[in-house]
Image (cartoon, rainbow, N blue to C red; front, side, top):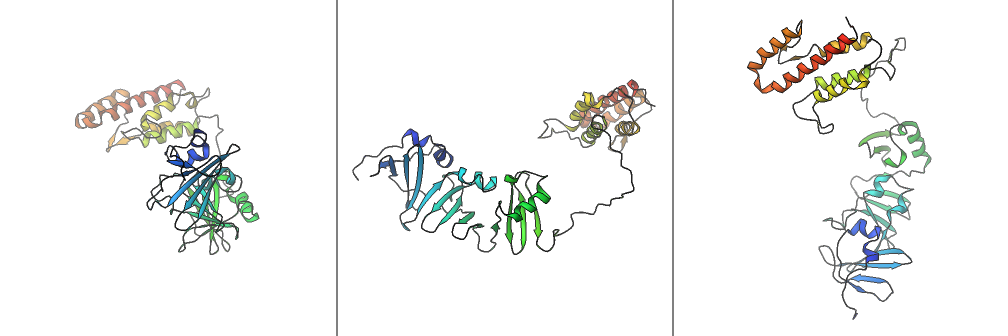
Length: 331
């Protein structure tokens, strides 16, 4: 038509649906025959045969994708339409395009700038058949409906303790159910014949054995954690804690969680004794007194200058443990 070329108005570009898929992409558009409707002047993507139509009416944005070669028209569906029906990963990881001619919803990449935005279709929702399947003819899986009794029973029986329902989805193929916990990044297999495909490991359980578990307010668990950090320490800081294992061990030993108003029990005393039995590079760092330890460390340091920081940290750890043992009058 004779309409001039311009840009989309702010009420369209600032809409959440537009921002989610197109971001800050700038389209050259022309007004269409319908009111408040704009059509892109130039084709998009590699072949340049795809145009987009934007219609903003009654505070609702409608985005359509028109393919010149096939005459297919896809409508972008807001992700909130799937929030109550689909797992979170199917809502947040994809944009959803409805083809009225084929009655199919395509699950594409979220961002319009994706190099294979039109053809990288991971899943397909076939409205007539009522299922979602993977878009892979060689290894096709079908998504199990979250509202089905099968999903509810399996989730309640096995996975409700691991994560909430929106972060669990199940794919079926040839009688095998693949259960994915997207937020935890783990997956399980379930078959209609056997619940276990293979044993992960054998755990012997002796019902007659008495298991003593210390209460949560005791320092036993924290001392174990401090010991674990100390014996697995590295010279480089851990990317999650931002400190080395030895530094984290010091922090736990200096905190109130490792202290008690009662003498340490035999288990806690044994943990502290393990601290004092460190051996590094086949050198025994435990001596009968601090003076002997200091002399041994000094002799070792002459032949191992590169590990001076580790030696100094151990000396500090030894002093801390000696103080704890003295404070509680441990034998």
